[in-house]
Length: 79
Image (tube, rainbow, N blue to C red; front, side, top):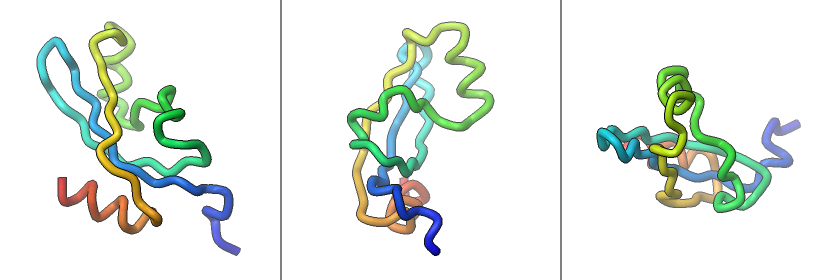
């Protein structure tokens, strides 16, 4: 049985720290439209620690969406 039977959306995203312009690129699979997945801000421990001190300094944009996680992973690596 596929593990992603309920996951319908796969996307790459960019999180930018507007204070120092550092960037984080990631990939995400979820069951909601990517534009409605605004609570998810990455799985990086360092990124999450930085966001705890000044969450208002971080902006997330959706780069692209894909029909499969495999395609999304390939785009993340390309980026």
